[in-house]
Length: 337
Image 1 (cartoon, rainbow, N blue to C red):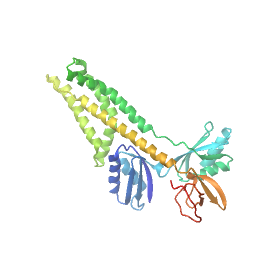
Image 2 (cartoon, one colour):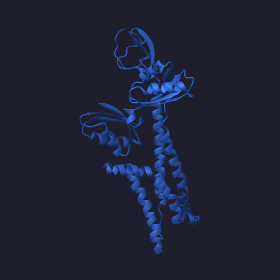
Image 3 (cartoon, rainbow, N blue to C red):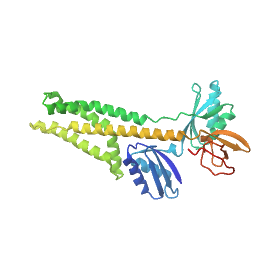
Image 4 (cartoon, helix red, strand yellow):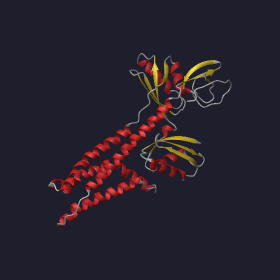
């Protein structure tokens, strides 16, 4: 049995490799392929040997968040035409809620859009139900843009960079011989280093912990250990050894700069990944949006998302092939691109 799973929290190729390595060890999993650009994993497994929940639990154990919606529940956005009042909204919501697999329905009269959470892969019953109520509907062209993770990384980087600047300035003043006693005091440096270490660096600690309990250490564990060592050693030097009149170097700026630079690298990596994802979506956008379906001798134009296995499609000369299939009859010239 094959299943597509959306996975949140992957940031680099090592994350994808960790998930693949760990799941391959599970009994009953035949093959697994993780697509970092799409944040998805395709798992081929034996339901008799391993359950779907066991796979999700294993992914969570590694520190990532699997989304059952990718394999069970999906969000569908529909454009609806013909609504005139609140009673229209109530009729559509009631009608769609009665369909099997529908979990949540929300209709917005002002924007003429309908948002449905359903466990069904095929959206044709949703559209047919709306049309049976006297309205016109089709899947919205706009796809939900998942930029939350990207924005979170950007603001985390900005926060870390701003808090690191005073520490970097203190190191610069020390190297150049500029007198700046405030920048060299332990309390001042701790005030700026602690938020970087435990707020900006929290994702490293979280993933490091999961990598320890899953016995699959990675880069995040190294970052957490290295920066924590510099941070704790600076506290020891600045607040304990100086009580005895000893003066030692502080390394608060080292831990803060490491975290900031790693966050900068991850931000650039996420941007590059986003551009790759957009390029893939544009390539997928070249596919035809509609197909001509032969229903008992009557030709009906349907959107690609509404095509089901077993439908008989008509491809005219010069048109692109809308979906994989077998030629039933006829010969022609088509656009192979």
